[in-house]
Image (cartoon, rainbow, N blue to C red; front, top):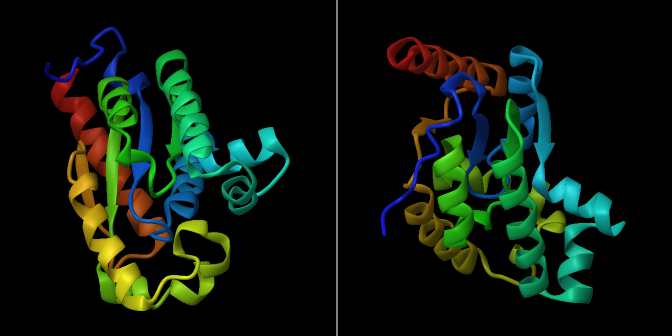
Length: 186
């Protein structure tokens, strides 16, 4: 069965979903987009943390990754099927779940924030402690995880190479892409 696009949602009202590997800047760029487009910003990991009163790393530790992925799926599915005009940042592993991928692509505009391994590696020390998936892994194992996830993110509406851009430039590029799409398809 192919992807079922929800054409009942006008293109200009669709949520904007940001995907990409952990630490690429989805939250920072999402906040920029939120300010520039006057839309609410929702960081899925932060929302799940609020609901459970603990960081994702503690949820992984106390409830396990499987429980976290189920919470993530339920939250994202509800959000994508019941809201409009939001900027949504997904956790780096969200798109591993086919149901999440399908619901996002059917109801939202999905932007893949692509950062090269060399650029991402420079950020590793900044994000290591807050990412449970990276705990107790060697650099080689992290690199393998990085590249294995790239194929998962390749299913998107638009890919943005972020290596040489700052967050505001990336947000502006996304807005220009959206405006072009809105003009072409309205």
